[in-house]
Picture 1 (cartoon, protein in one colour):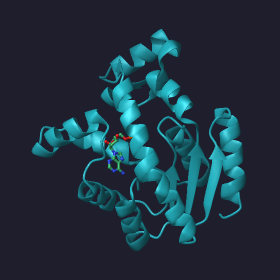
Picture 2 (cartoon, protein in one colour):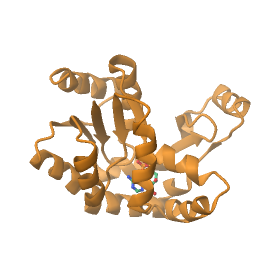
Picture 3 (cartoon, helix red, strand yellow):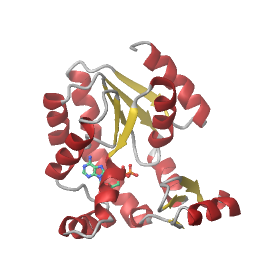
Picture 4 (tube, protein in one colour):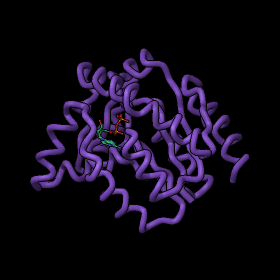
Amino acid sequence: MIGLIAGPQGCGKGTQAKFIERDYGFKPISMGDLLREERDKDTDLAKQLKEIMARGDLVPNEITFQLIKNSLDVYDKVLLDGFPRNMEQAEWVFNNIKPNFMIVIDISEDETVKRLEKRRICTATKKIFIADKIADKDIEDCKAAGGEIIQRDDDKPEAIKHRLNIYRDQTEPVEKFFVKNGVPTFKIDGAQSIEDVYESLKEKISSIL
Ligand code: ADP
């Protein structure tokens, strides 16, 4: 069974995906994480990805198809996060994977910018933090895991604006495409607290699982 989880940058998809994994057993697969893993290797592909991703552009579709195929073989209940993000990827997903449902967590552009400017990440554990709420223990834990807490290149103001434009122009039509093709789609207000977003989400998921 395959679910999709979508929504603008900073909407909290990753956090909600972890709850869904805990309660329903769906393995979250984040395209952003898969790509960052590739980007941090010492290969020609990594060099190419570095430039594209720092600008906030989408990487070529073929690369995403290959990465997804490798991961899908491993699990039978999967929640795809950050894929598909444009119409060509949506058609590929529809023809090759046949998703069973789609969750869209919605937040405003202003809220996205506010959240992303404050977002920090541990390079080792990939845990996300809010800039003014990082405890000394968080810094130590990240260091102990061999990483450091940083701001992603693409969470800087210019790249954020660029990613939002891409989201509006290329990713929003994907939601309409799945609705039109009969994939059950649930829209959730992401401006609520983390707990309330999950409550709304559970109600919707329970109606189809
Ligand atoms: P966010 O949701 O905050 O944009 P992600 O971690 O999902 O961050 O993605 C980071 C970057 O990885 C994107 O800006 C883009 O360069 C690349 N990326 C992620 N998903 C896709 C995709 N489906 N197609 C192409 N590029 C992608």
